[in-house]
Amino acid sequence: FIYNYMKVGIIGSGGREHALCHALHRSKEIKEIYCFPGNAGTTKLAKNIKIDFNDFEKLKEFVINEKIDLILVGPEKPLVDGIVDFFEKSKIKIFGPNKIASQLEGSKIFTKKICEKYKIPTAKFGIFQSIEKANLFLNQNTFPIVVKADGLAAGKGVYICENKIEAENSIKEIFGGKFGLAKNILIEEFLEGEEMSYFIVSDGKTIKNFQTAQDHKRVLEGDKGKNTGGMGAYSPSRLINEDLEKKIMNKIILPTIKGLSDIGCKYKGFLYAGLMIVKNEPYLIEYNVRMGDPECQTILPKLKSDLLEIVIACCSENLSNIEINWFDKKSLCIVLCSRGYPDEYKKNVLINNIDRIELKENEYCYHAGTQKNENKIFSTGGRVLNFVCLSNNFKDCREKIINSIKSLDWKNGFFRKDIGYKVINE
Ligand code: AMP
Ligand code: GLY
Image (cartoon, rainbow, N blue to C red; front, top):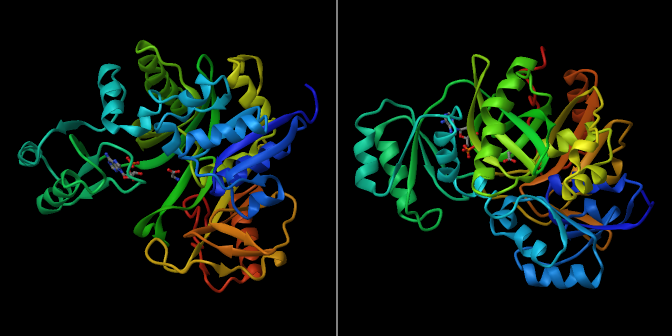
């Protein structure tokens, strides 16, 4: 490799993108990083560029002018909208799945059809084109039942319904257009088990494991209250073992990749399988065609290998020739949020003591909803900072993180003190 020669662009502005930026920055081959648009945290490592990443033409103009060699995509929306196909048409290297492969996240029904054809274990389901047919189906089923909108819904298109009235209301909302025009609806069996996230990276030919995690989506301690983007996570999942990993690969991941390949499509990028584990058997709940947030922040500090090398290997279909090495540590992440999140919260609140955070070895602080203004840092989102710590045990990770958050003492913030409770014996 030639040192200091690559210019890389990262699309997105969250904690996941700051973690990607930080991991790339460690690479000897990096010359410059650009974030579209990034956050206050990425300003230390990269140039933040104020371009709306949904405007592919504008992005392309900038990428060509600045001679950016490679683009990484954080969030799902541009992937589902075909950003990879768009840049590849202009022979610009971009890491992520193309528009068809991104349907794994962009359409729950697309994924269910692959599951059906390739006998991938998943919740039993039905697809309906009208309110009447969907309601009729409810009569033959027991509760709880899960009602889902087909397309992207920013994590909000899933209803767990305890009774018929709730189910009918959710069907009405989805067909009423709450998540955009709905031609179809998905109704599925409720699976009882424990959730786990399984990650892989692929170049279209080779698949490599990219760790496991468990996240905490609910806003309140004890996994109660409203759903959020994620209040914290830990890695590895407590559920993973060799036998389970083989089942996940052979029953879920490989048949999915085969399903895509049968329609002439290769999967390049990160793939995140949201699984329900029932008695050491995996069931697919959903795919995401990207890293998770905050799972990415939790996992990347464990990566011993050079992230840029992995990404370049994927872009040149060379993943089989490199090894991905990891630190044998536990990792835990706690998200510091704006008071009120996931409902209304104040924006542009000064984070005054940010310099007080003293990060020791194996401690990281990734920004999410922050912005820098005249050398001061302000909160701009619901999830504001991600504190991550690596250690030999989860309890130690959590204690160190809570100390860091206390030293920051940000009056507008709140966080869950119980992240990882299932792996931490009090
Ligand atoms: P999704 O957006 O498909 O990941 O669904 C959001 C959340 O709803 C998941 O993380 C699960 O907690 C829950 N969920 C979705 N589908 C099911 C199911 N079939 N059975 C039980 N829980 C589910
Ligand atoms: N943490 C869940 C997600 O990234 O979708």
